[in-house]
Each structure stands twice: as structure tokens, then as C-alpha cells.
Image 1 (cartoon, rainbow, N blue to C red):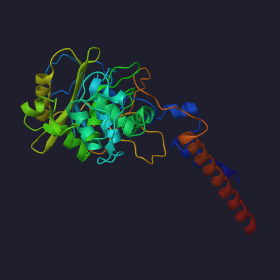
Image 2: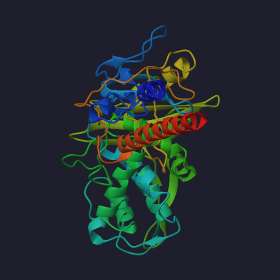
Image 3: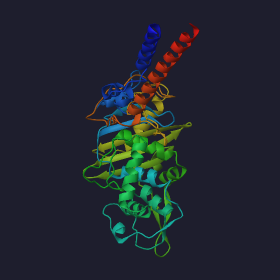
Image 4: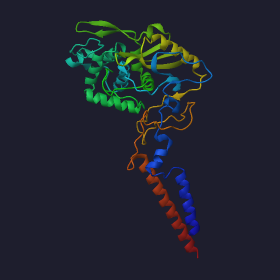
Length: 381
């Protein structure tokens, strides 16, 4: 029996070392997936983050940016990628990514007078049932209609429901820097995003055929009480940059210039996002896209655009940037609670409780096995 108990103890110790019975909150916090920088530790930097061995990325007046390969998710270069900034109208990308799968594009919408009167950029809505969701999405992403953003929120059940779903979608995409307070991106206290998150959201949008069509449309007919009028896309690079797909630009006096866009060349797509740019950013973005195409496949990535959280995930989503399939990254995570969200530890539920249960079950099973061995030995004497 002594030998059996020693064997059981050794087995339980081995199981514990393997992480099966790490059942204390302190131990859980030590697990590498519990804290860290989304996309990889290098992306915790606030200054320029660029790979060695290739030409440095072009200079820009933007306070923050990300240059990434859309196919692989590799971040090729960045500057303060997780810094929190006002997103202005680039937040409309999250509105679209959230609502496109939820709203029937053929649904007729009658905007409220309040929606029609929204401040800032507008497509010119009137409170009449002459618009389809399809029209409003086009207005949202082509001409940055704040009135269209509010009308879409009304079509989805109201502002409260829409903002709740937008923030839920941000968490699903692991865009943890983003907090939506409006569907339009107009400045509100507490609203924020990051260049990293804008790149994540744009990548998710480009996977939606409707989103891709809206952002790449140069001109379109828009309904009016009598007939229609023509609207044109505000993204100047659609006319200037070969292979430009589009996405979204924005500006407010507090946010300054912001932009997220993508372009394709030779079968590859590069995403560029910038925030808090003091000047005209169009030429800078074009140069950054050129740099991205030249660097992809040659530069060692400095991070990765993480995948969305699986819809049926049974564990707390990763908040760190370990190596993923197709990624050149490796290594553990560094906790940065002042700059990154850290998954809450709940000693009564979730992964910790699961590990407690697994550990207890394993120990119980081993003890029962030892008891059975002892009984069989007793029967032989």
C-alpha cells in the first residue's frame, strides 16, 4: 500500500506540474494566456516598432499606426499600436461589421427626425420610408453619414441595443482597446479605439462581401423624395492609389485625422491604419502601403492581428500574442494592466473551476485505482 500511495502521489504531482490541478487564483494568474499584449509583446511599445534588416517605414505625422498583411495577419510595422485615441468616423467600420450580418439589406427604413438632424457629416436623410438598409450602409461607409449611422441603429432596435452589440462585437474580434459610445464616431466621453483595433475591424470587414463592396464603391445613386442624387466616396485613395480597396477615413477637431484602408497588389492585401494625424494623411498612407507591399515576405513581423474569439469558446479568450498558425511570432506574454485588458479571475467559475474539478477528479480516480490494487493484492493472499 505504501508503494501504491507513493505512486499515486507522484502521479498527482506530475498532473499538477502539467497544469491539471493549478487551482489557486495566484497560479491561474501565472498562466501565460491570462495577461499580456494582444498581438504580441512587441506591440506594447509606444514608439516606432519596426523589423530589422529592411528599410524603415516612411515617416508620418500620425501618433499611432499599424501596417499589416491581411492574409497572414502579420503586423509588419507599428507605432503606439495599442494607444487609445478618439476614432472619429473610422468607428463606422465597427458599426458596419456589427450590423451587416444582422440587418436585411432589403429592409425599408424610415429615419426619425432626430436621426436626420444629427450633427456633422450627413448624406441628407429625410424622415420618409424611402431608404433600404443597403442604401444606408452605402451612405455610412461612402460619405460618412452620421444621419445614416443613427438610422441604422434605429433599424436595429435603437441606440442602446446597437451600442451593446457593437461593443460585444469588439470583444469578439479581440479589439479590447475599443469602446463605442456612438454608431457614428462623433466624439463622446469614454469612446476610444486604437490603430491595432482598427486594423482588426477592417480585416473582419473585408471578409464580408457586402462590406467590401460598400467601401470600394466610388459613386452611387442615393434615394431622394423625388428620384435620386449621386454620392461619392470620401476615400481619395480610391481614385489615386492602384489596387485600393477602400475602407474608411475620419476627422474631428479632437480626434484629428484617422484612417483605415486596404489595397491589393499581385494577389496580396496590405492594411494600414493611422490615428491622430495632424495633417493631410493621404500621401503618407500611400507610402505606407508601398512599404508594406515591399516588406511583406521579407520582414520579420513585429506582431500579429489575432483571430476572433470562437463563438462557442468555453474559456476566457487569450489576451496575449503567442505564436499562431501561419504566424512568425513566438514567446510568452508580459502583463501590462495599465495598457491592456486582463481577463478577470473568477475562483468560482470558468477555467479555474474547471481545473479544480479536473484535478479533484484525477486525484479521486488515482486513489480509487490504488484502493482497487490493494483489494486485488489482498485477495491473492
